Amino acid sequence: MCKSYPAVIANDHVSLTVAPGEIHAVLGENGAGKSTLMKIIFGAVKPDAGQMRWNGEEVRISSPQMARQLGVAMVFQHFSLFDTLTVTENIALGLHGDTDLQELARQIRETGATYGLELEPERHVHTLSVGERQRVEIVRALLTKPQLLILDEPTSVLTPQAVQKLFVTLRQIAAEGCSILYISHKLDEIRELCHSATVMRAGKVTGHCDPRQETAASLSRLMTGAETLPQARPATAAPGEVRLAVKALSLPRSHAFGTSLEQVSLQVRSGEIVGIAGVSGNGQQELLAALSGEDRRAAAEMLQLCGQNVGQRGPDARRALGQSFVPEERLGRGAVPEMSLTDNMLLSHHQPPFVQRGLIRAAATVAAASAILQRFKVKAPGPQALARSLSGGNLQKFILGREITRQPKVLVVAQPTWGVDVGAAAQIHEEIRQLRDQGCAVLVISEELDELFTLCDRLYVIAKGRMSPPVSTADVTREQIGLWMSGLWQQDQAQNGGQHV
Image 1 (spheres, helix red, strand yellow):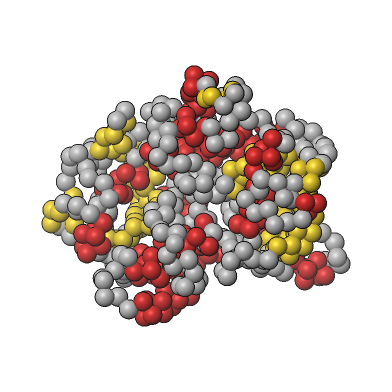
Image 2: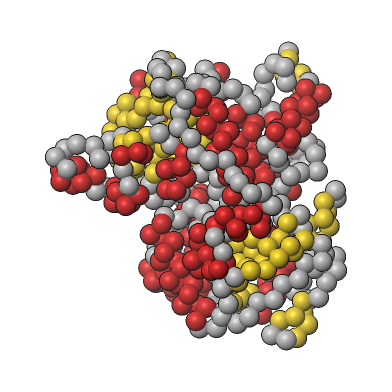
């Protein structure tokens, strides 16, 4: 398969063979061409050249509808859901026009319960967190009972327990003869789940392997060509003054399917990284809205930024006090898809030297965007590239770079390495650590326990809108945090004599 775009060759004579019942991984750094190849197979992208055979016969898949008719289903990394429709209505869009919505809702509940991907079919998508939206995509694919299931970063926002349950499901599906193409940057997952792997770099296939016979280090080396990755390191100095404080924050849910926040309290000091763990849909979305200034219903004193009450101030006022914010939703919230990277800079850099007396200084803005591309190794044709043209991981690096270069006093970042390859994740973590070492107070909200343990100095857990006591990552296990994610910290503390673990 060959596919070129302006200034980039996405697929350069890529060949791939998948057998019935095989779970086949496709490995590569962000921008290696994996997602383009999957979209070609699914009919969402037309190749420039190449041949595809399906069950031994040559086919030209011209659209996703044709792909679904053949028995191909795909779960995209960037969701293809309509915010104003319900879960049931979104799933019905890919089915026959005479689909009974009540029967479909029953199937959604049944499939979700079977696979550990519980959903409320009547909820509107705009009320769902990123993790819940991913469940919709996976359930939608499973409902078609496909012969080939393509999964692009399917576990990026699932808990460890949900991942293991999904793996049981995928093995069962494969045992029934369904082929699975599996894209993930979690090398341990690939080694545990997949029977074979194709490795891509810069649009070309660079090798094949049996991941079960490889180590995480050897797989990383095949992907990146690098021998070693930056290692985790502790803070270089003790934390300083409190920069971000949440004090007994209680907010009723803003819509019928939201989560109420109840007496949420936390502190983040300068020179430390604090993490918040939790299963998707337990109040993270509501807390992020309050922290960013999108939700200003809190009393002024419930949220303090650099010593000032900001509960009822908007995003611009908080930015002026030194806060930067990286949302979990890249396209549409972190970046405007149809705008260039240079124009996207202005979403948070609308002050001198980029804007003066109401006029945009184009040269300064272009130079700043170009510097981010270089510093954060963002693969893009240039600063004028549209945000939607970047792979998920590269767009994440750009958004994070845009906020880090503001030299914030407080950085709030959600899902910092969602869908990001192992090399880029290590780089992002190192940039966040450097920010911490320069005195920034960093709050990370993530559903990746490994990431939180690698990155954070202290942890909180959020469950059903309530916040656990803080605990040092050095003094707690992943299993402990897993229990707390079910809201069991009070019981756990009682068993330990009321002491923090």
